[in-house]
Amino acid sequence: MSRVLYVIVCAAVPAGEVGRLVAMARDGGWAVQVVATPSALAFIDVAALEEQTGRPVRSRYRGPDEPKPPRADAIVVAPATFDTVNKFATGITDTYALGVLAEAVGLGIPVVVLPFVNSALASRAPFVRNVESLRAEGVAVLLGPGEFEPPPADADGDHAAAFPWERALAKLSELASP
Image 1: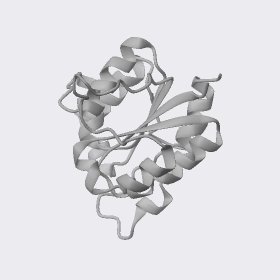
Image 2 (image 1 turned 90 degrees about the horizontal axis):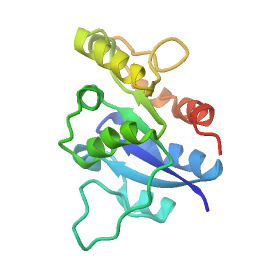
Image 3 (image 1 turned 60 degrees about the horizontal axis):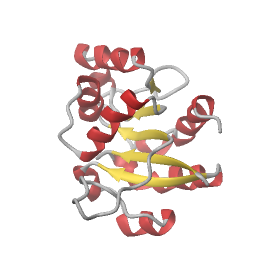
Image 4 (image 1 turned 120 degrees about the vertical axis):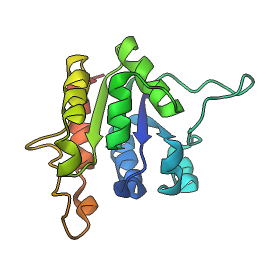
């Protein structure tokens, strides 16, 4: 039986390329379940991801007569927005994705967070504290030199093109060996 990786995708420009992360994960032997924040649905191709994974993209809690999805063996949150990182760290569960994350930490499921924020947001004291809080709970937040390095807030061009999807899986392989 394959290990199950939840890929939680947030509403940020790189989200449209999350299929790249899904393909790399599947090539690495993972069965992938995509979970999208409600806002992320506008950024992703739901039908293509469902075809790629063979599973429905989840963005809301299931109804009482809907089947329960398989439990995650690991989770990657990418791209993770400023809002999602802050809510995750403070225990806010106002979306299905955040509920999954809040529970994952308590269950000891490895979680890798690959943020997508600019330098102005990354330098905010609440964000810095929340990143440290997540790290203190064992969450791997890939932010800083050699990981995701936030571009300047006024940067021209599309810095999303160089989003380091592969770093999330490399860190995951360190944390969740079979």
